[in-house]
Amino acid sequence: MGYRGDSFRQLVGIKTIILNSIKILNPKNYNSMRNYVLFVSLIFIVSFGWSQGLHTQGTQIVNSNGEEVLLRGYGPGGWQIMEGYMMQTSGFAGSQHEIKERLVDLMGETNTEVFFDKWRENHFTQRDVDSLAAWGFNSIRIPMHYNLFTLPIEEEVVPGENTWIETGFELIDDVLAWAAPHNIYVILDMHAAPGGQGAGSEINDYDPTKPSLWESQENRDKLVALWTRIADRYKDNEWIGGYDLINETHWDLPGNALLREVF
Image 1: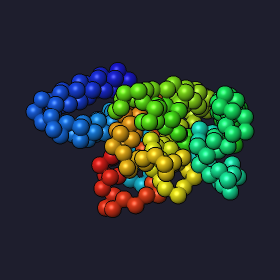
Image 2 (image 1 turned 180 degrees about the horizontal axis):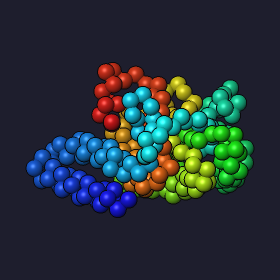
Image 3 (image 1 turned 180 degrees about the vertical axis):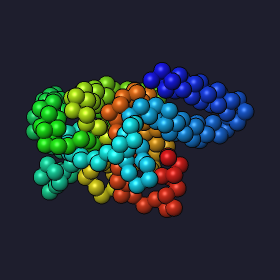
Image 4 (image 1 turned 120 degrees about the horizontal axis):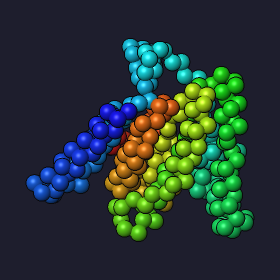
């Protein structure tokens, strides 16, 4: 475990040196090069910190002992992000922000925030994880909403900076603590990326009145920063089974250029 920690610290140091060199030698291209360096660093962070042990071996997924792992999974849909087709609200409120607007109209902002707090507290609990283990499941894929981890770009006091929120991290911490005694892997899925990654879809909370992930460099920068922070926090947790960096895009991306840029 110490080796992984030392490797991670060395990688962060190298990343800092590279970014400082770019700023001095090529300031005009600093922002674009920074995004590339940050995301490459994220990939290496995940690799160096792969204490989770799951990896591919030919056509199999195996653990750190080389034993095949057949993932039998469950996803707590609607927990961190409400989707109209699941909530049966598609006819009048499809995306989560629309559902929230209807609730605010009904009972005000304060009661709506209390409702969402209680929803997250009770929708998926340790009892559910205990039951999943008893039923033979060995993995949980968590659909995440970015706004439980960081503010939307429109609400940042300083443009381009990231205000971090502990709510999302604490929810993941809870699931990891509940899952570990049962040897259940947790897969982190960015279901709603900053700005939303898909149009005409209820699954990623896209708001057409605001710039999407693909229409905003700030949103893409925020996504990279968020994944870097997630990887740093969970790099040594053995029950992290994997990362789904961006869920279904539902967007016209010619040649997948923007997708490749982010990756």
